[in-house]
Image (cartoon, rainbow, N blue to C red):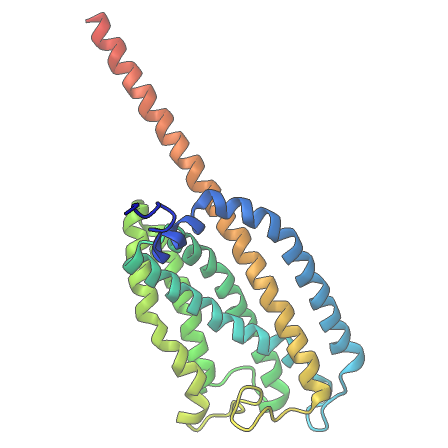
Length: 267
């Protein structure tokens, strides 16, 4: 009986490891990234055109409702970014995925930026609606905590010189902090808040008129693709940074061995 070939013995996990090889990631992402960026730019421009020239003003909120087309996608992506960090952290701690920490590190500043944008646009939207830029509402407060979690992850990583230790500790914090996501999602249902309840993803279908829902979905798709493009670019930058660091360390070690050999020869 002929033994199974190496290819036949390949497990799904080893296949995943091969596909996640940093060199293959750099090759594939180098091809995809320009197209992804162009697609994001095109959809966002179309979404902005719908926002300012097609979508009608709301009968209650007037033109201020158009803040929603930036605010809602930003809030979604702030949560998606942290979910990506949690998944990447799980991949690092459990499967030792070679690109897991690269993914988590790249996602943190992007998620933080979208969360901050959600907070700023929410405040601008809240002023004409609630008469104030900020209230300690359950939804607003939980999103603010999410922003602080992002800052905490980045601060923890930058405070540690040992990259392996930094990766593990930020992964643990990332997984522990994922509890904030269901709190944000269901805060408007669990507590009496000023923030409006879910209007798009809800039982029974969206509660928004199609003239507003369609531009909102287009903007959400465009911003999501932009997030993926920025995340891929961030991962590429991190892979290159680690390669440069490894080369420099190798040069330092080689120089040190050369000095030791020279000292031994002269002695």
